[in-house]
Length: 66
Image 1 (cartoon, rainbow, N blue to C red):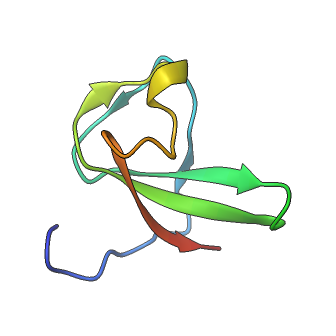
Image 2: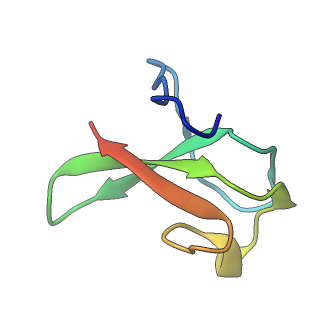
Image 3: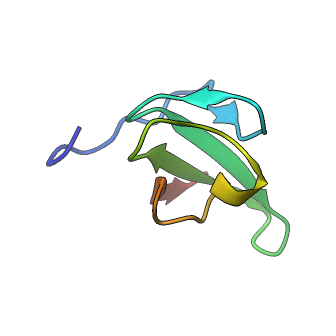
C-alpha cells in the first residue's frame, strides 16, 4: 500500500507470462549478475506479457533484493 513499508513474504511468486497481476502483488526476478532475486511490486493491475516484465515502470516498482 502507498506510504507503508512493503512486506515481502517467503513465498513471493516468480514472474512469468500469462498471469494476472493484481495491484500490490509482488514477484521475484532472478538477477544472475547480482546472484540474487529482485522483488517488484505491481502498481497497475495487468495480464503479463513479455512487454510488461519488470523492470517496466508502468507496471512495477522495485522493492528490495533477497
